[in-house]
Image 1 (cartoon, one colour):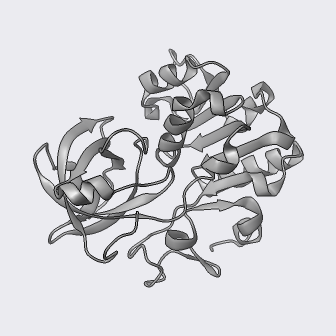
Image 2: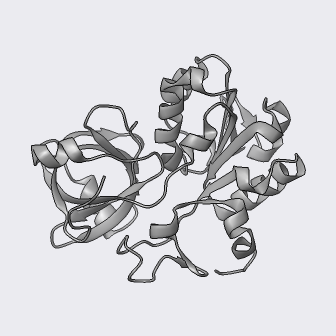
Length: 279
């Protein structure tokens, strides 16, 4: 989609609000201008800037499938002033929306290849649209491995969604928690401890990951040790994105801007930057 003016938010309406967990919720939106709604299009991995009048705006990943009609879903954790304001919205309320912004996942490159999708914490949101996109086109891809890690078993959400994903052919879902509970049915430990269960061809696979940078560095090291080329390892980076146009500099990562050059990068593009402490 080519935005008429990337600096001006469009009016959006809340169609539905879904409480995913005590601090996590999903807003299902549509643009109020029918022409703008019809023209709106995004790629998996891109994000929008959601704006509340008098409060501010925040960058939020789009989690809906690009072909899922004309709804625009965002899953949000209430952690700051703007997100707590967004948490108060209900169906019928209005907000501003700018976007979509950034570079998404390499869906064209992934076609016909095995996929390994690794997420940590609540970092699943940036890959949800990619997973939905792939599973709606299941015959266009090889084996799909979805690996989700959470810090505590109580942090795990979307169990029904993971069950639905696992029901697809040639699709493996692996789940781990650093800290389990008595009834936790999956692995207790790090996500990397599940990699011996993966089914993929390292020379013919695309790796997608998001979550804490320490986890992504560890996953990248393991994938490189399995002979996955660094150009086939992709990471969704998180930075404090204020403008989404590369002007404010808040999301600068070395010579790059996460909002404009990312948020998705290949490992060969940013491997050296990930080794710089505090960058």
